[in-house]
Length: 361
Ligand SMILES: Cc1ncc(COP(=O)(O)O)c(C=O)c1O
Image (cartoon, rainbow, N blue to C red; front, side, top):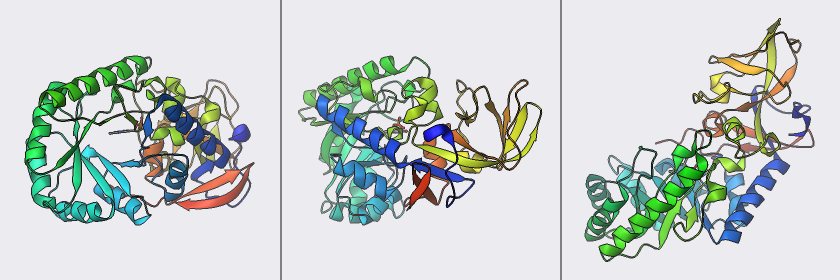
């Protein structure tokens, strides 16, 4: 974002602003880097929830999209995307089974599974006529969902016996989200996917898809153990990625425009709180976001409608001035926004709806 100035006119303040040129550079860089390594790119669209960004990812060679929820899959299928992976251990209860079956009739659909009960529920819900395939989720160190790699084969066999096509295995190396942790997490990802594929082979099943990826590890993943990458945040980047060193401030394509509503010695208050910036603040983050236009200032406090910036002894901006804030975690910020104002050279050139806003069920 040139100079981190709030673009002139035509944008919502507070609101989220996307720099079209930085976004394009980020999309091209990841597409090129995955292609050069022989890795398929299946970007996670929970970051942008935007058909416009997903179309550009597809134009640049993405093999399909990763989504987090059935309702995100529905939005992108409605938008014409025909290869969707729900990278989540979906529970096919309630109306979700029928919705998955409908999705599978209009897109190549794969779904994450990590237990026998979910396999049985999915198979019963979609029935033999719906060609849903599954990827067994393995845990490579995050300790969230996923089975140990050695248990992937038996679960895959159960899925195949239940009538589901097994496409392979996936993992999320999310323990990369700590300072200095990316290389170890990438190594864990490769080891877990290799062991999981061996477990399927021992059970007599092929494992063509070995899907991994997070933004902090994306540059470190080697083809072979991994066949497919699913980074999401890289499209926009955010304060977490800057702090972790996965990108520099110049690679951040999205920031919140906000107005100074109160100021005093060493402090000022912005009208972008957690309902604009999102609530996330990991223990290692220096604050609730970054203020690249105000070196030395920290976003030290966050409420629903207020962000407080502090600095020892520094002169604050004037009340009424507008400033740009980089959210800590861009996915949670975008999920709150109705649209994104797209700018080039400080002027608004477009307004993209957040098409899958709130589609989290
Ligand atoms: C299962 C899964 N895959 C891929 C991603 C994308 O990784 P990142 O957010 O680091 O870009 C996430 C992020 O939470 C995830 O949970």
